[in-house]
Image (cartoon, helix red, strand yellow):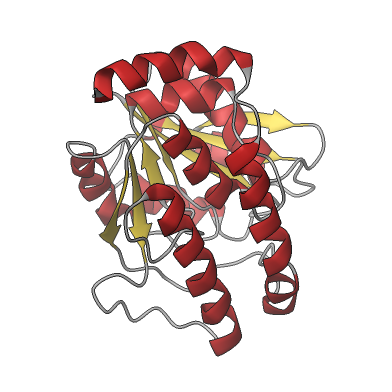
Length: 246
C-alpha cells in the first residue's frame, strides 16, 4: 500500500523542521506533503529544504480545506491511503505503522488519546466537550469512539476516493463531519490508542474557551451532515459501497 502523510500547516516554522526530522525515522519524506495553508513565515521553505513536497494555499482556508487539497494530491499521485499528521509536533510517527495496520479491518482509523485509559492531559472543560462530541459521533458511526476530534488518522482506499471528491471544510467540524460523511457512504471507522506530545511550537488553532463556546455549533453541523443530500459525485461511490457491504 502506497501511503501519503499529509501535514496541514499554518505558521509552523518553529516546529515543522523537527516534525519532518522525526517523521523521516518512520516514513520516507518523498511520501510526505506539507499543505501550507497561507503561512506568513518560513514553513514552506523549511519543509522543502527538508525534502518534503509542498502545496501552498495563497490564503488561510482552514484545516478541512488543507486536507481536501491533500486528498486530491494523493489521488493524482497514485496513493492508496492518507495519514493526517499535525505540523505542531503533537503526533508521534511511531504510530504510523499501527494506523496502516488498522486498515485491515476499517476504512478510517483514528488515533485516540483517550482509549484504553489514555493519559493525555486536557482541561476539564475541553475534555467534557470532547466526550460530548465523541458520544454523538459514536452514534452516527455505530461504534464507540473516544476521540472524534483527533486529527491523527488514516483514510484507506475507499475513504480516500470519497474524500478526494468531497471533504468537509467547516471550522472545527471537519474531523467529526467527515465521520458522518464516511458512515453515510457505508465506510467503517475504528480507533487505536496513541500517545501524543504537547505542542512543539506555533499557536493552537483553537482556544479552550472557543472550543467550549462552539460545541453547539459542531453538534449543529453534525445534524446537518446527517440530513444533507449526498453530493452527486459521491452517489456512485455510495452505491458501490452498498454493494460491497451487502
